[in-house]
Amino acid sequence: MWLWVAFIVFVFFLVALDLGVLHREARTIAFKEALMLSAGWITVALAFNVVIFFLYENHWCGLDLAGSEPDGRAAAVLFLTGFLIEKSLGLDNLFFIALIFSYFRIPIASQHRVLYWGILGAVIMRAAMILAGTALIERVDWILYIFGAFLIVSGVRMGLVGHPPDIEKNPIIIWIRRFFPVFPKFAGERFVVRRRGQLALTPLALALIMIEASDLIFALDSIPAIFSITRDSFLVFTSNIMALLGLRSLYFALAGAVDRFRYLRTSLGLLLVLIGIKLLLKDVLVEGPTSMFLTLGAVAILLASGVIASLLFGRRAPNCT
Image 1 (cartoon, rainbow, N blue to C red):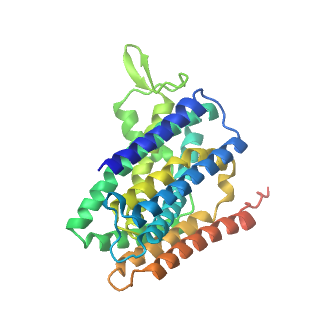
Image 2 (cartoon, one colour):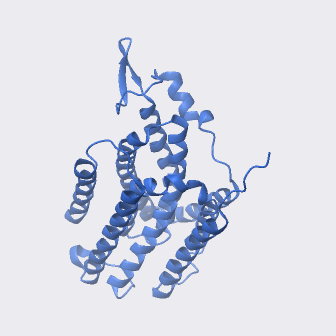
Image 3 (cartoon, helix red, strand yellow):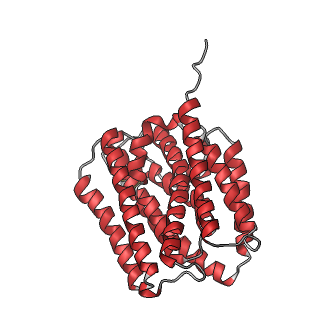
């Protein structure tokens, strides 16, 4: 248990360092800085994967992968595969976040604060859902078949639906505006202001609520997906959280080029379908080092194909009037 506590403390230390030291004041994060921060978060995740190798190779803290000798290499491959899947699915969430910021006209200097609290809430939410999912699978193994079918349906929908959702008609926004007073103007970086003797939500608060709600929805895809790679709760938890930590910096690196990655959503849909099929065939497929490397290779190829296709053919044709 102390290993879990140590990892959670490590995560909150990184988040506090990011907000309290690197970005104490609200400001616009330039593309170059965002790119360097994204590279730094990926480096931290890869360094942690080295720790994963030694933890499982030496069976420290009782960590063990049954039937996966050598354990260290298997655990490192599983962590990396899970990290890539969660990071890639997080990109789809980033595109929706960009849509939210555009809809509410959130100033670039204030987007960092909203993203910080949004991702911090996502970490807590994912942790609870992963622990609940692990306990559920241990008691009801056939739930994985439902996860597989759900991922296939989600993947098909993701690949076929090309238009962004209409935030104005989102039921969450409609419900909030109906039951809570909303202040239409910004009040610095405040989420709540007092207006005519009562508290009112600012546009920053609405954006944060939408981001938290969207992460809950995207988690319904990403968490079943990671269980298709491994059922080891520590690997599921750490790979998921490490993938989340760098999303804020990645957003600022990609915010100006969201429209260029128009084919990435198709590759993510294919990825979900592949993972769903893998879950449905879990009793047929032989798990081992070969299957782990094949899964890692398939994930990398699908993601690379979506990125390359977007960069080569992603420019939208100009409108002819």
